Length: 324
Image 1 (cartoon, rainbow, N blue to C red):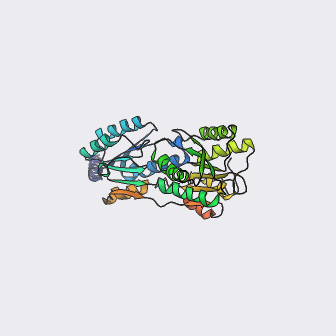
Image 2 (image 1 turned 30 degrees about the vertical axis):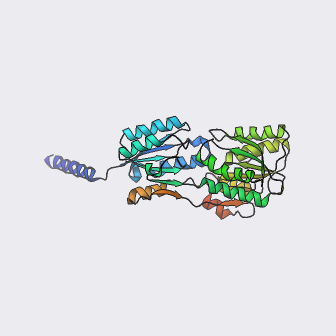
Image 3 (image 1 turned 60 degrees about the vertical axis):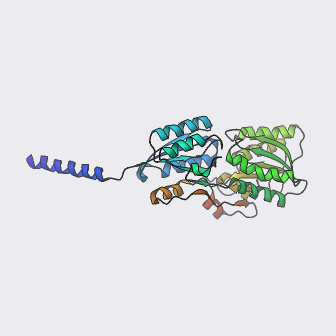
């Protein structure tokens, strides 16, 4: 009995020593948008949860809301809680100066991801971003080089004021100002980048008798909604149709639609930023300023199965399967 008690005491001491010498968890607060926003965001949220886990050495919490004021409240809460790192993908690019300065005073390292914020670069450590303006350039150049003139575009924006909407809209608006194309309808899928709202934009344009030959939808879900309106109205689209369809985000269902010629092009927006930020944190080597991810455009003429496997996000419906 004495030997058993002594053995148990040794076990307890060993376990206590091991826990005492275990590396402390890194506290991280993540301010993000809701996964319901889009397939892109679903993949992004899942990626953040997978990487910033207890198994990977983190004590992390993630807040998901498209309301800018709720995002800001969450960020303030994380700062008060004493997080080591604050990661932000802002619903709206403006109004963050005070919060970022508070984080700096509290010794919290701030990394922006996915979306830029309108603030002095000294207010955050680094921003790992998709170059939304470059994405818009890729899409706009494709339209200018591949659509017969006159080019008449229905522009379906994402959440107004977001970095993604601003960046993806700007090159198209510039081309319109230069007389290279016409924007015959300009709508939005709203704060949730809604398929249903996008469909309504196109339905309204059809009802108003607008003549158009391009749908420029700023995410794949909205492109899907836009095409539903075309189908209902009997308007041809895709490789051999009247209306050219371009989406953004590289959801695999969208890439399969492009491959099948049901859509014409899709622009990449890589949601997998967590591993890079994890590497920065673990190495202690933080970059300064904006770090852009490399992204591309795929068209019916250039896309391959390998592209879809390597770059696509979310479930693959399979080759030849069209998602309407």
